[in-house]
Length: 77
Image 1 (tube, rainbow, N blue to C red):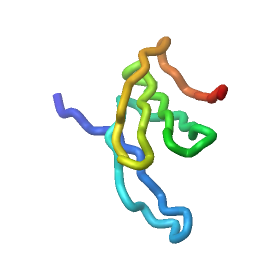
Image 2: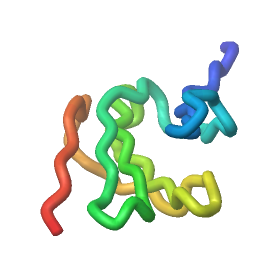
Image 3: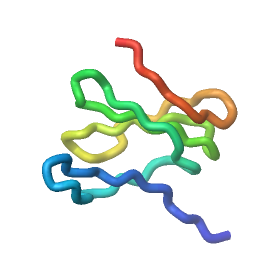
Image 4: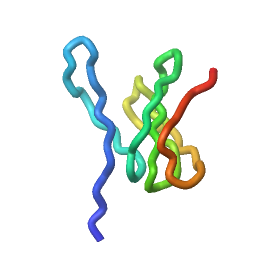
């Protein structure tokens, strides 16, 4: 079976251009950013988890297992 990577694009808000991509879990869907902008959280509906992205590194630094088919995400700081 062919595995297609799910990616999140990193956008430069000054130029509105994609500057990088980050591979996340299956079925990337919801996105939230931490208040300080250091992390982005992406729900992955197909893999039932949330990818934690470090915005300085543009890479996944952790994965949080959650319930089936997460669609939305919010952050309480």
